[in-house]
Each structure stands twice: as C-alpha cells, then as structure tokens.
Length: 391
Image (cartoon, rainbow, N blue to C red; front, side):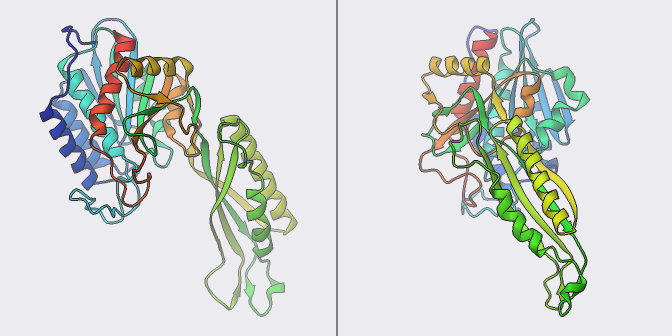
C-alpha cells in the first residue's frame, strides 16, 4: 500500500504511546454531544501525523482527517466513535474514569486508539492510490451522530466509496472477527407514550380520568407485538422492551391524571421497523381512545439497521485471510444497534466485530475495559483492507 513500496508498521514505542493515549481518553469520558475535550485531544493527535486536511465540528464534535495519495482512486473511510456512557467506572484500574457516573464501557476509547494508530501509519506513507478518511464520529450511543455527520454539508467533500468500522466484541475469541453480509445489527428506537386524562381527589376517583387502565393494557400489548421467539437472523425478528413507566405523583391523596410508558422497539430490517412502529402507534391510539385519554408519541435514540454490503464484506474476508485472521458470522446479527448504518446510504459499508475474548466483561458492564492488545490487531486489519482496495 505504501508509496515507498514498504508497508509502514507500528513499533513498540508506537504501541506504548497509543496505549497511554487510550488510557488518557478512558480517564476523561464525555457523553454523546458533549465530546469537546475528546475532539480536541483527537485533533492534536491528528495534527502530529500531517494529514492533507482536518475537518472539525462534523455533526457536532466530529473530526475527520484526509490522507490523499494524489493519484485517482477510491476513497475509503474508517470510522470510530468519540462518546462514553452514563455508567460509573467500577473497573478499579489505575486508568479508571475520573468523571463521576461516566465511563468508556463500550470501548470507544480503544476504537479511537486504533484509528490513531492508522493516523500514524498513513502519516508515514500515503496509500498507493486514492485516499483515506479517518472519521472520529460523535454521539454514537444515542444513535444521532452518524446521521448528523453524513448530513453535515462539510462532510460532502469527504464522501467515501467504501466505509468500514471495527467494534470490539466480548464473547468472540480474542483477535478473531465476526462479519456477515446483510444486517449485522438491528434497527432500534425508543418510543415515549404520554397519556393524559384528569386528576382527582383519591377519595373521588370517579370525578377524574385516570390513565391506570390504559397503562395496564398498553404494556403487555406492546410486548405482544414482537416476534422475539425467532432467531435474530430471521427477517421477521422484532422485539419490544418496556424500559420505563410512571403514573401521577408519588402521593396518596391524588388519583393520577397523567402517565408515561417508554419502550424500545427492535427489528432486523428497516422495513420491519416501519411496520412495528405503525403497529405500536395504532395500538396506543386505540387504547387511549377507548379510555378517553389524550395521547402524545415521541421518539428518541433512533438507529437504522446496520446492513453490510456484500462487496465490502468480500473485501474484508480477503483482507483477513491475507493476514491469517480467523473470521465468520459467529453470533451475528446482533440484537443491539449501531448507528454506523447511516454511512451505508451512499457508500459500500461493512461493520466488523473484533473479538475481545471469550471471558471478557460484557459491553456496558461497569467494570468493562478495552483490551489494549487489540489496538495493533485493529490497525493490522485496517491496513490489510486498504491494501485490498488501494493497492
């Protein structure tokens, strides 16, 4: 791939520095949309690698770096995420989070370190043709970041032909890769149902309009819409999870006049998600109308399905075979969601799940920590993919 004829490699000093850089990010997690320090740290790192361009403020705090060969060819985007989670870090490690109630329990700090490794390698030797964009994306955890980035006018000049991302995956053997053509992660969205009636004195509930009956009907009826008994790989897979419910004030003298029910909807495909949304809305309206209640519906945390392009997956497979990395579908597709699917609207994309070890703590566990040894493996995989596409 390198214009010098010798592919650049990471040395021991690189690995040590990238590991400490990752651990610094781990100490200072920032939530979706708040990644100001993280973006500044990334930008400073990228400047040291002398890219041809740095674009900041993409979709919020997103940062992208362009490494251009100057020779016509495809453009390849490699993406990682900036944000942490609202979860206390209970790992007990020396580099644990210093921010109360926040942590990097999804491993986004490690994903950033992998792209930092790529920045070093590309800074030392541009691809033989075409160009590479390293995309440090904001706000993955709430599902908004990728869509904000791809719809940002400043992203248009960086539009890639191919887009790839790596996410670490506990439960998969260390260093192996789970990848599959078609849906790799489910579409999902959070839905809020607000039911409004009229309060009354608790001794005269008949003078008010309580949402109690509607709530008691709505929750089991929503979960019954799902087809979660089928395998996740089944195109008909859907799941509805009630995540929150509240009714009235915590008092004994008032019959409630308002209630909220939160649910998460999941489906393997975007088409199935549209059908599930329509069914949930129809159900809620029918129940609210039957009880004489006003109804408001709102959505949050919207993720499209992560639909891997067959051509991009074939490239990944060849690249992994070239460096002897075992790969297969393993547990894919996942019930969980990833907003990387938004990059597939105009590019051939593939999301890879890089094994963090069969005994690793699960993602979003309070004591999860990204395995530093995956930094070099992730960079090796990306370099092999670039060789497949850019020579």
